[in-house]
Each structure stands twice: as C-alpha cells, then as structure tokens.
Image 1 (cartoon, rainbow, N blue to C red):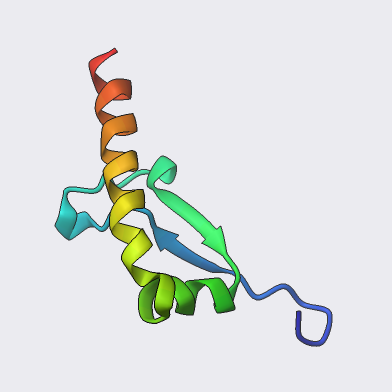
Image 2 (image 1 turned 180 degrees about the vertical axis):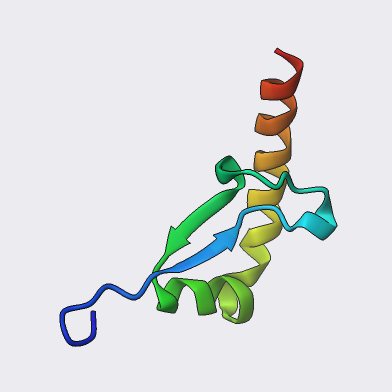
Length: 64
C-alpha cells in the first residue's frame, strides 16, 4: 500500500486469446507484486495449472 491507497491490478484468469470468457467471473484483483510474479516471476508456470482448473470449472458451469 502506497500513501494509504490500495493499488490493485485486475487480470483475466484465462486470457481472451486462450478462449477465456469476457465476463466478470474471469477477472481477479491482485496486488501489483503478485501480478508481476504471475507473469514474470518464478511462479509463472503455475498460471498454466490455474488456467486448466478455470477451464474445467467454466465448462461445468456452462454445461450445467
């Protein structure tokens, strides 16, 4: 937190280019440090695992 203001980043869980839905259920709010870590840090490979989980959950929701 800088100067008492929360500076969050919004990110799509599953990118539109990766068949992600253009809806609020596909968006998360994360802090800038975590945002950098997901895209550029050592944990960026975990994003692929998260994408698979989201695709499964979205498929179940749509097909229910």
